[in-house]
Length: 601
Image (cartoon, rainbow, N blue to C red; front, top):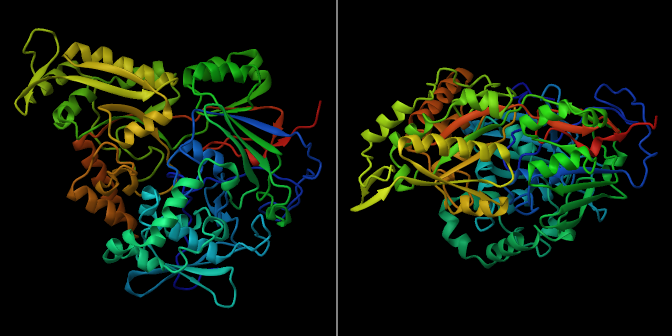
């Protein structure tokens, strides 16, 4: 319910890092569905060996949901190991209750603040039988806001949380006080993975601190020296990412095995609070989820054809078309291509001297033929893009200039930037800080990923025509992540996932995120772009916000921190032995916990 002075948005969940959850379901069971009608199957008749085998493209960066920045970790943890207050309906992208009893009551307060009031389900308990309460939610916020935990990316999304007020008469009721009218208040506050305080903070080290105290910059020096802050952060950063028994959440599954370069295994809990809730999407049917690490596309496709895996997402487009023509594949798998809110890009390390001049970055952008990428590398299963907002979104600026494939323009821009061949080796040179430097650039990309390798090769070939030498470096994903964090690259080629919500650009584009734990790997940003990011976050007026969204995208286009490539379709294969297993546009594109077995034919 909403008071007269309330805001009840219909925005869907934000999908960034692991803080923001992607929980969804599509079918029915013996519980009630969204309309209150009964489903058709009986969840009690499930074989003990019911396992779903899922391909993932590399190792995780750890399985602490509050610290991870990895989409792979998110795929494993979200809605499987952990649970949030609300989840997303995959059909209309609306929010619906999960841990919470319903959508929150949201009120406007004085001083431009907001309150968001939740109640946690009575049935919701931890694995030890103790209730999941508001104290657990407040603890989770404090753990992320502890300045010494490695949760930099997540902290930026929770800046608006000023305090969590717990109802003195009901430990499951609480109100989040927002210090501003943040545009994603409901989405972000409801999507936090609630962690058990009794387990992650057995000594109660964070209990003496208030959220307001952790927020105040004036306290930072004192907090950074406080032994309670330091001891908690050291324990939290170190001990809850790689040991299965130390990864505890409110979801239906427990991590049982982590084998680097091989797999991550989850097993369904014998007793899970969700089994007592009469709602169809609060369910889990497979007894085991087996995430098999196959970082080479060819190996993964072979495993799929041999039915060694049941689910594969982000299938390279060319290989997906081959699957559609393969009789064995189409016999055993449903093949889906839902729209995808993600995009792929080439990123420049703008702090590298050779790439600090925007003319060099624009010259390299002119070496990319997007028509070739869409038609030949993506088999027409992608859309060319020019900016950081999905073309599926209303606030996408469709008037951004297109950087056309133009070799002569690239040569012109490089000459204007002072680059010329000084020694006759067909590689451009320039005096930088008193030394002659050749325009030799390292291109870092994830090994085993054909698309990124192809992009690197295409750029290498075209760059040679204008006097740029590119060294292609394929890197194992965990090693590459560390190189990105340390800014140990010149160029990189990757993708960002988004959800169907309004965009908060802070994590990727604000200068405060240009840190080891931040995601502004390329070093983008100036005073105007930072101000726009900050103002967009708190602007509720759609017309004004749209204007700022457009201006921000113009600045990104002017500065060329990325070459924006394509927004691909999400190519997914799911074994036909499952029902209730349709694909979705929401990352990761499926919900394995809701898969059910088809009846034998």
